[in-house]
Amino acid sequence: MNDKTKTRIIIFYIGGIFNALLGLYVVFEGPSFLPEGQIKMLTLVFLGFAVVNFYMASYLKRKVREALAASQSQNDGGKPAA
Image 1 (cartoon, rainbow, N blue to C red):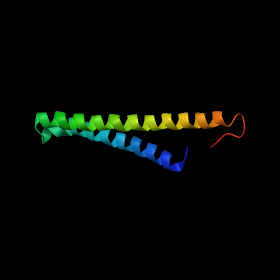
Image 2: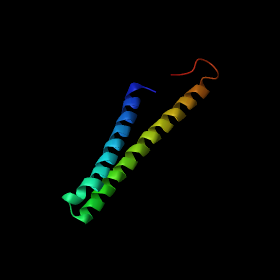
Image 3: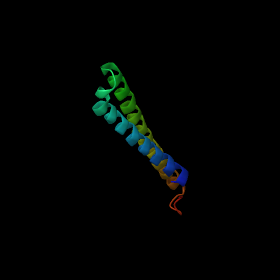
């Protein structure tokens, strides 16, 4: 796995954590300054983006593993491809 892909996966995880924290902040602190309908909508948006970020990170990891396995199987027992 190259550094660019690792960085992208880490950025997706950081984004997911950030969005989840913002969603929780809206849930707990939002009632003091936001109407109820807006709290629900913002919470759904932030938590939805968190789910998408975590999904994309796991998707990238799975695709990298598949590509590495395919390249190693093409080497026919020789030196594994990094």
